[in-house]
Length: 271
Image 1 (tube, helix red, strand yellow):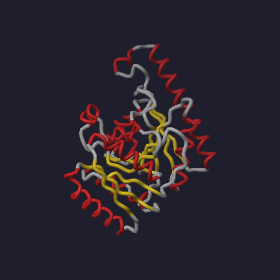
Image 2 (cartoon, rainbow, N blue to C red):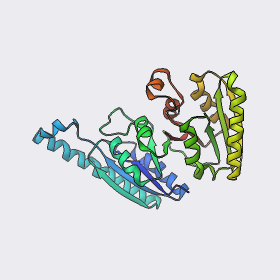
Image 3 (cartoon, rainbow, N blue to C red):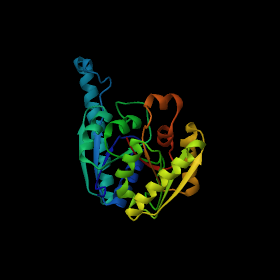
Image 4 (cartoon, helix red, strand yellow):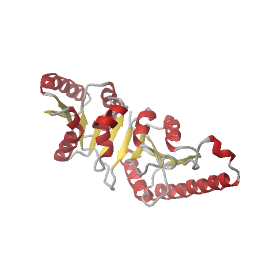
């Protein structure tokens, strides 16, 4: 089933117009419509602040004005791109709103962390955990979206197997998929067999896939995969997200954090 509905959060700031050009570029490539979401929480946004009287009301009015400005830029970008678009707005924390609105979309288009301000911006790692649908992270700089060559980061976990199933609509558009895994030396034979099985599954869908298993320490896997993607000139990286606990990744590092932090590639992830 192709991706036909995309969901994205829109924040009015200096980079908004460029991010929307990328967003509608993806929509045009996929033949999809875009649901833009204006979501921002008054600061402070706890329930006790609602009793703050005039000051709180002024903050709410300012928030509404920010959301309206985002809507204006979104509709202008949609018209320029000639893409079908819809707007939804809510005064609440962006991550909460995006998780609720994910019911209406096939994929979320998200940006790398732009700020630590959770009242105005989406926190990408939280979004990945909460969305329940694939999240496509856009590069930091505008770049044409295409899927001629795809790097699929393999690890035999629930998250990666789910990513494989949910990414098939994109993989079926590719010219070539590289199934890549990073493992310890004693795991190499098993991982190569796993890769062969996955390649066979993709072949059943008419998708040509090569395989590559590299030996390295687990903590180096993310950076190793990014180097492989650069060497292979991959248009897109697909991976499962947070196969380990987030706390472990925050403390020790991990593939998910490395791929989210990378601003060079389009990265499709699911949890």
